[in-house]
Image (cartoon, rainbow, N blue to C red):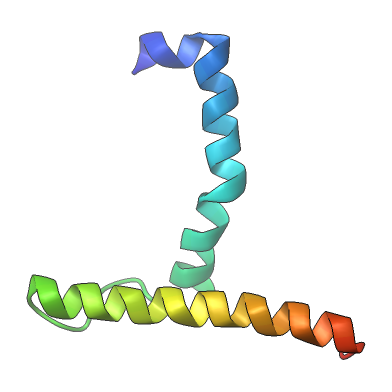
Amino acid sequence: MRKKITLQEYQDRYSYRIQIVEPVFSSIAYCKGLNRFNLRGKRKVNGQWKLYCMVHNLKKCLDGYNEERGYA
């Protein structure tokens, strides 16, 4: 990984990842309070994760909708 990260191509790719992916995880973990899963089992954890992702996406949609309408 250290060899790859020294190349400019991978540095550009990694900086793009920080812009796109990291805010989603920080929003889910910090703002929505998911710092650990409450359920056991892969199926249940997947369901809980998908629920949190759905809430995150709905919030983004509603923020865009409210911006269009002029709501704060």
